[in-house]
Length: 224
Image 1 (cartoon, rainbow, N blue to C red):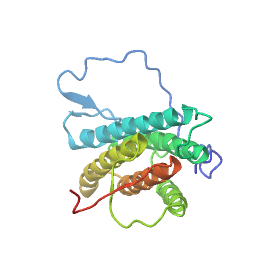
Image 2: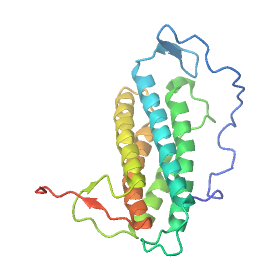
Image 3: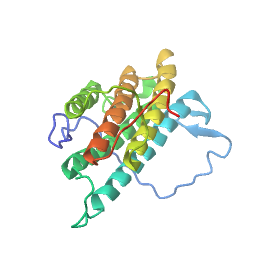
Image 4: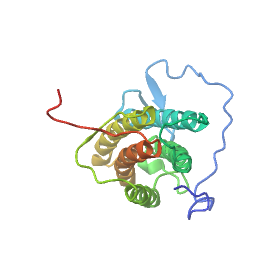
């Protein structure tokens, strides 16, 4: 699904980071405030901080998904293993897509940590191109999946559950981004990206279940 040679990759659209992190703690936030990219001091419970903090939280959960996936790929199959065949190619492609998403989420967090008037033309961000890539990936995955006849419950495999957790955190990040966008304090592409990404996590959870040879857990309203 992911290709390093895709249009826009490596074309120098955004500035490369110039960082030198020598100390993690600064004591500057002990009073309950933090600093935006433009230098403004704001309370740590500000709506903007809540929004990009949730994007950061989502990034951590995506990392957990990638680690679960890596553990699956590292598990050797026994010669006499009668379990379901694992589609390692599909899982490898998914891992690459999730890594790309982690970079995109960091770009999104950087944008959210910047007031609109302070955004640099070459500052990292998410755009319609990233949204279109997610849609194309979902379409490819959907072509491999059977139509749904009920809602899917998180389950069937640890990877499926992790992807559903990422989906729900992404929905929360989207809600917070909507609140910022309504006041003109957030990029509209950020809301669109998070909306598509949450859909992608759902599709990827189903795709991963199929790749692992696991069984989907479907909602049964009259289950007892």
